[in-house]
Every structure is written in structure tokens, then in C-alpha cells.
Amino acid sequence: MDRHDILPERPVERSRGFMPGVSVNPSRILFTAGLTGRHPDGSLVSGGMAPQMHRAFERLQAVLARAGAKFEDVIKQRNLTSLWQTMDAQFVSALRIQPWLIANSREDGMFATHLTTMGFYVLRVRSNMVEISNVLSQ
Image (cartoon, rainbow, N blue to C red):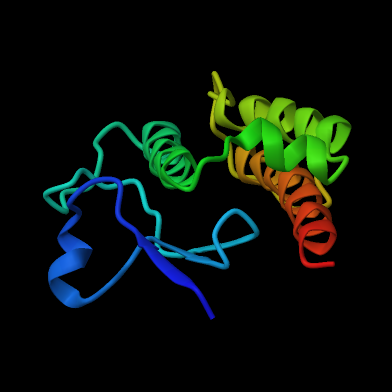
């Protein structure tokens, strides 16, 4: 088996023996893991979930680039364009929720709480992520 470790930057994980990407039979199968929203020194990206997700995807994009691929290649090859665009739009909607008024109410009350609304948006994204994961694992 031909194995190629992929380390696009020098993350703190390296000192722990962690490798963000491993290509087996290069150009065919790429495994990734632990790509979090952290700077190379290990500190968490500030500003909340959106900047941290952006950083995690930057890191994934760097691993793909070192392996000679791009997000677009994976999405097109697996026929995920429509599903990916839908999930992306739903994720943006979830991240933009900034309620003008935060109120506590019962789940069966007349008005939904901000947590209920946020949960709805996040569950839509999660459902699409599960579907994408199922397609990619085939």
C-alpha cells in the first residue's frame, strides 16, 4: 500500500503525532481528521462558530490542494452539487440568526424561542450533512 502523509502547515497537532491528511494510493483515496477552527499555534480562532468553521474549511482545502484536489472536484465527481449548495445556503441562514428579542416560552407556546428556531436551521444542515456523508461513504 502506498501511503503519503499530508501536512499543509505546521499545526500543533504534529507534535502529538497527528496527521491532518493521509493519502492512500495517491490521487485515489484521501483520509482527513481533526481539522478544527484553530490557528497553526493551536489557539482557537476568535469570533465564534462562523470564523471557526471558515478556518476548518481553509485547513481542509489546504489538505486537498496538497493531495492535488479541490472541493469542486469531490463535489462534482460524486454528483453533490445541488445538495451541497442547499446545505451551504441553510448553514448561512443558521449563522445569520440574531434575534431582536430573546424570550423564554414553552415549546408548545404561541411564539418559538430563538433556540427552537436555531435548532430547526441547524437540524436542516445536519440532515444534509448526513446525506452527503452517506453519498461519500459509498
